[in-house]
Image (cartoon, rainbow, N blue to C red; front, side, top):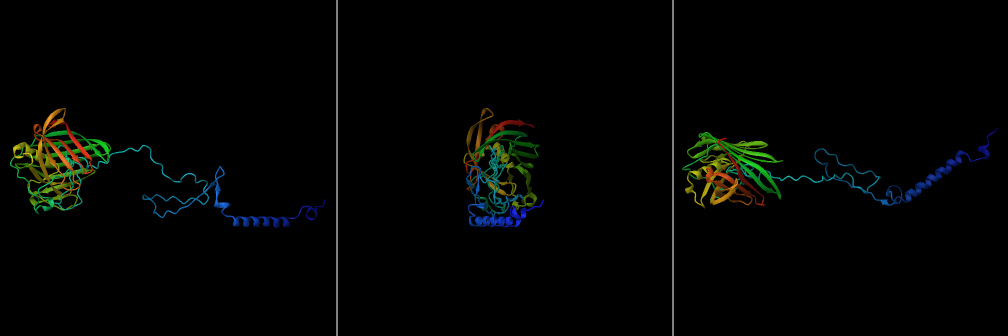
Length: 372
C-alpha cells in the first residue's frame, strides 16, 4: 500500500515547525512587555498571595574567628516568610556575678591604677582577708605624688606584738552589678619568731580563687617583707631589696624606692595589728597610721584612721573590736572599713569594702584555728 499522508493527509513537518516558532516568538514578546507581573518580578505563596523578596549587600568584614559571611539569597528563594540565618537566643541564661576580684578584699583583688609611677597612688586594693580581703584607699596628709624621692615617711615603730601561728576563716557576701554572691576567705599566718609567711586567699564558686602571699623576717620594728606575690591564674611578684634601696617588680614596671617600714598588701594588716596590740594607748580615735604599701605592680601610700571601739556579732557572740578606715581620696577609690579584735591580738575579724558605684563586699570571721 502506498503512504499518501504527506501529499493529501495531515500537513508535513515543515509547516508545523513554522507554526511552533511563531508561538514561541509571541510568548517572548509578552514576557518582555510585562516583567513586573511575570517571572521573577513576583512569586506566589501557598495561599496565592504575593511574596516580595529583597536583597541587601553587607559591607562589613566577615566575623572574627574565621566565620564565613552568609551568602546572598538566591534570586528566587522558595520562601521569605521567615528570617534566614538568625541565631537562636539561649533560653534561661545563667547569670554569674562579675566579681573580677576587685569587689573582694583588695589584698585579694586589688584595683591596679593605670599609672606606672612607683610612687603614684594606686587604685585602692581590697582589705586583706582578715587584714585585707580587698583593696582600698584613705585620705593621707600628703598624697603619694607629693612624697619625696625617698618615699613616704612611715610612723616609727616603738613596740610590736605579733600573734602566734593562726588561721582565720571568713564568710564573704557582696554585690556586683546588682547580683549577690558569696565566697570563702582565709588568712593563714605562720611564724617561728624569726621569719614569717602570711597567706590571704579568697575562693568563689564558678569564679575560682585569688591569693596573696607575703614572706619575710621579723625585726624589733616588726615585719620586714622580702617577697610579695599576687596569684590569679598567673603570678606577679614584688621583691624587697633593702641592701640596694629599691623594690623591683616581675611585671617590669618601674622600681619603687625601699624605705624602712615598707609593707606589702598582706603584711601591712599584720603589722598594723601588731602595733595596736603592743601600745593601743598610742593610737587614740582620730589618729592616723601611714605605710608605704607595695602591690604587685607599684607602690602606694596607705593611711589608716583610728575610728572607735565597736561591738560586732561574730562567731555567735558579741566581740569587742576597734574600727579603722581607709577613706577614698580619689574619685574612684574604694572605702575600706576594718575591725580588729583585742581578744585575738588585734587580728582583723571583719572588713567591708564599698565601691564608688555602691557594690560592696563584707567579710566576717567564722572560725579561728590556732597553732596549725
